[in-house]
Length: 516
Image 1 (cartoon, rainbow, N blue to C red):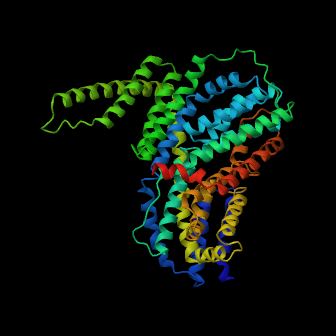
Image 2 (spheres, one colour):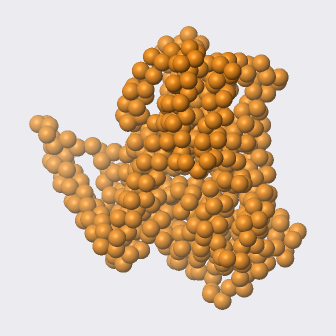
Image 3 (cartoon, rainbow, N blue to C red):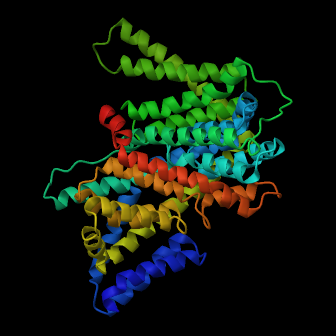
C-alpha cells in the first residue's frame, strides 16, 4: 500500500472536497494526514515540509497575483452599479426583432461584461434575473434560454481580464521555468500575465463567434425555440446605444491597452480599471454625467501626455515649457481627483462600495487560501513520489506528446465535473504542465487550451458553478433538468473551439508573439 500512497492521497482529496467541507481546509487537512502517514511509514522525508514557509512567503509576495483582488474589486463595483441592466436593455431592444435576437444580445452583453468585470457569478446572476424572464416571455424554449445565459456568463473566464488567466499565467510560468531547469538552462525565461491576456483574446472572440453562429442556425432551423421578441419598447437610437456601450468599451481599452501596450503592469492596469469602474458607477447612482465625463477625460489626457512628455520638476534644467506642462498636469490631476472623490462619496453614501469591498474580500480570501493550501498539498504529494509517477505516466502514454496532452485535457475535463477551476489550476496543473512543456508543447498555447477546458467546468453538471448561479436566479418555472439540457450544446461548442485552437495554434500564439 505504501507504494501507492500518493494515489490514495489524491483520491482522499476528491472525497474530502465532495464532502462539502470548506475546500482550503479539506486540501490542507488531507496534506497533514498524509504527511504524517508518509513519515510514520518511512516513505517520505518530512524535512521537505521546511519549504512550506518559503511557499507561503512566495505567495504573499507574488507580484502577479496581487492583481487578483484589484480586478475583483473592479468587477464587484461594476456589478453593484447595475451596468449589466442598461446593457441588456439596450441590446435586447436592438436585436430582439430577429430570430434568436435576444440570445444574440445576451451573448454580446456577456462578452462585454466578461471584458469589463471578469466575474462569472455576477454576470450569470444579473442576466438570469434580467434577460431570462424576458426570453421566456418572448416564447423561448426554457432549456435554450437557460443554456445561452449560462454560457454567456462564463465568457468572463476566458476573455481578459480574468482571474483564471492570472492564476494560470503564474502556474504556467512556474512550469515553464521548471522545464527549463530540467533541460539544463539556468538563464530562464518567465511568462507574463500580459502574454496570456493577449493569447486569450482571439480564442475568446472565437468562442463568441461559435455561440452566435449556433444561435443563428438554430433560430433558422427551429424558429419555435427562439422566436422574435414582440417588444413594446422602440428600438434604441444611436445615442442610447453609444451611452450604454461606449463606457464599458473605453474601460476595456484602458485596462487591456495599458497591459498589452506595455504601459502598465497588470496590477497598475487593474487599479486604472477600478477607478474607471468607480466613475461609471458614479454616473449610474446620480452624479452629473458631465462632471464624470470631464474627470475621466482629464485622467485619460493626463496619462497620454505624461507618457509622451514626462516632466520632472525637481530637475534644475527645466525650461518654461516644462513648468507650463507641469502646471497643466497638476490641473488635469486635480480635475480627475475631484471626479473620483465625488464618485467615491456617492458610492459610500449608497453603500455600494461597502458591498463591493465585502464581496472582493470574500472572493480573494477564498482564492488565496486555496492556493496556499494547494502549496502544502503539492509538497506532500511530491514527497510521496507523486510527481515522478505523473511524469512517468505521461511519458509512456501512447501517441507521444499529442497523446499525453489529450489525456491531460480529458482528465481536466472530467475533474471539472467535480472541482472548481482554482483547485484544478493550483493542484493538478503544476504536476502535469512541466512534463507537457518538456515534450515540446508551447506553454502559451497550452495555457489557452487549458483555460478553455477549465471554463467548461463552469457548465458541466453536477457541480458547474454557472448552473448553481442560474438555478438561484432563475424564475421558479425553470427546472434544474432544463438548465442541464440547455448547456449540453454549448459544451460541444467549447470542444469545437478547443479542437480549432489545437489545429490552428496561431489563433493563440500570434498576438502575444506580435506584441511581446
